[in-house]
Amino acid sequence: MTNQKKSKIIELSEEFTVPVETLYQAWTEAEHLKKWWNPMSDSLEAVTNELNEGGVVSYEFKSGEYHVKGNYEEVKPNEKLVYTWNWEFKGDIPAESYKLTINFETTENGSILHVRQEELEDDDIINSHQDAWKKALESLKSHLEGSDKNTNDSVKSDEGMSDRSGGYNELPEQAKVGGG
Image 1 (cartoon, rainbow, N blue to C red):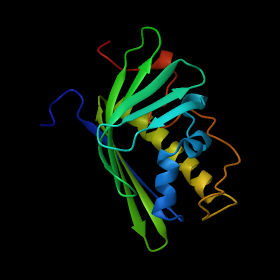
Image 2: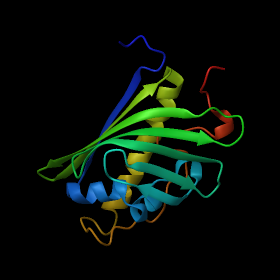
Image 3: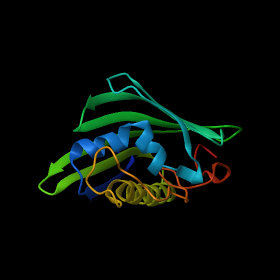
Image 4: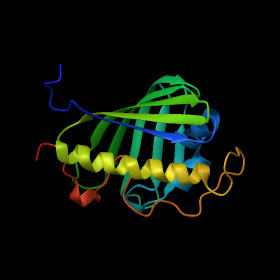
């Protein structure tokens, strides 16, 4: 039922002019992720993506102030990923837990990425996460469709994301989560 505390959902889609295989690589491979995904102006330092059911997803950041961990529930290469998405912070900031479903769709002109984030608590969190996802998808698009458009092995980005994004749009000390 939808009466549970964490029942709200974000759904976004973005079209790309690259093949679905390239899009999937950019979403799952460390060398790509490090170029386009920089939540809270932080850089990825280490990425683990065990792309199998039960496999670990783990993102460690240079600041060391937080990390993302989860497990894959469903993995269909170049089609669909379903996984838990747990933000854990240093200090007294409560952890945040979500579920992501990422669908990769082939189109006549490239591909579409569909993002679904579940288990959000309230409208303020939905708005900040929705804004963050929009910025993250713009950064991914820039990474994939920059000057080396439609190439699998030489995808580049001139700049990473300098704003807070990627499913979380506040500084850790500003987090509006938990029971407080």
